[in-house]
Image 1 (tube, rainbow, N blue to C red):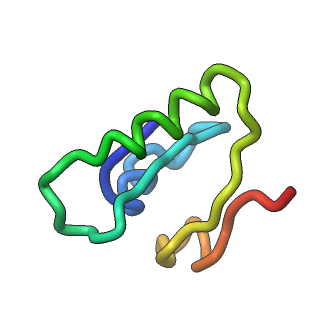
Image 2 (image 1 turned 180 degrees about the vertical axis):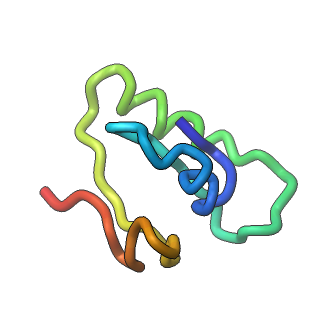
Length: 68
């Protein structure tokens, strides 16, 4: 699970599942508790969803994610 930058996933290319939450700006230092609450809801059973806000070169294109 990550609450940093979308690019963090590039450090873990072999993981089978990855839960990530992101703020509205990539350079923010303030931790938004909304991200943590959203991640906790998914960990405890809520249906995840979302889109990757950037391209992760060699791994995922912009917009990659879950659709329900």
